[in-house]
Length: 101
Length: 499
Image 1 (tube, each protein chain N blue to C red):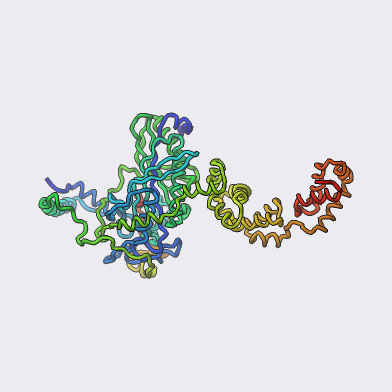
Image 2 (image 1 turned 60 degrees about the horizontal axis):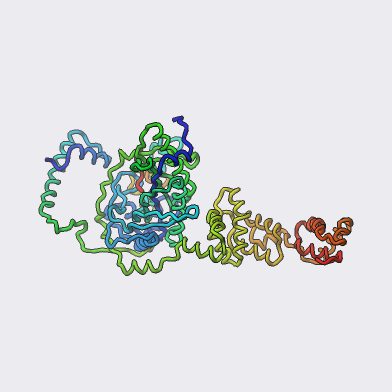
């Protein structure tokens, strides 16, 4: 049983705004399946008394004081942008999407 | 659709509403949530950005301590439990309002959980359950261009300003609110109002809906009595307190009309329109993005020190509800009178006016009378009517000193609202002071007596009530700038009658 289906790969590609061909779907589904199977093997070794790890360093509460630091200039900020207009990043229109909130 | 909508009374007679509110509050910290860029409103595009909030490779976020503290204080004020340990999460989506293709938020481990907020509606207390209070970052502002109207439909491209991206945003989610029946729209409004007042009293945000530092989404569903809750819709773009109430009401009516016609409610996002007061469908939830949340690896977990949390709790200010109750007692108002002060949005204004030296009665008179009337006429909030509490207190002190009578005070207030200056300046510049020069007043009185011998005789004969006509005559010659009581006394004295 595959760890990831061709349909799931197509779904992820759509979410990531990637144009993936039918042939690529087969290729990536196979490759991702190998990766996920390997991760699943690690999962089998983990016993019930081992909590999942999200952070590799045993730290909490790394915070900074609420003090303003220098910003980039708009020119610097936009220097890596493929396109800009009115000092704003210019991107293709996105429809049928909601902003996060 | 040309279906006739059912009347609201009919809707609530047959259906039971369930509402839920999601409120976003931009915190008033100096800097953004995960970097040191400033947060002030406005500013030229992309002048408040850095590698962290632009999501440039190699940059790492560090959480703002003041934002964590503010969120814990909001949680405590809403009677929540504060998590002993929690994490940030990545909410993954591809939309250019966030430059890094995800938003740092909290998912299954919010900072504050399980609280409540008591609100008053028509003298009744309604307890609104709070599901969670969590911390996330705000998004950038997208400008859609290329189309005819600048709206997203028809636009060919989007221009993005990331000044707002990364500003700390607190999301407060209620539990489903049931059993409010016909009052559901008012309960929703009362909740958002109270929440705004609580957050303002904490001093952690300016909570201005018109500037977007307080934003509200309203969930609404209808069900038949005894049956399971219906499918809910989420109404966005609700940008004023009044709209919160209107959005719930119009969505209840719309859903009832769909159900009456044998239809089903689609779980979807709807957009509220301020001008028409109704909602139109947005994205359907069935095709909702799968956000693939996972713990944010670049930020270590939060574990608020219980001692710190206890200190924050002990230092909470008096919350608005208790504060109002204390003021009501101090001002000696009945519940009904206090309610009208609340409805007018005048509590803080009256409080500040009293602090500036006016009596509670006088402060209330000006704010609920003349100034409320002007605010209504101009369609603005009372606080934005153009007069400040200290000006109102100054005006009243001029009345108390006998320099202005009621009519002149109104004229001066008109000048204050019109931006002509302080009450004293306006009184002096426009020569509105009460005529206190007894010589001038006596001359006016004698003139009035001479011009009205019949009335003067009546008064001499003991009909002191007739003196009113002479007072009127004197007020006319002094253009209203005399104190009516003084004039009356003077008339009786000149006619040799005891007052």
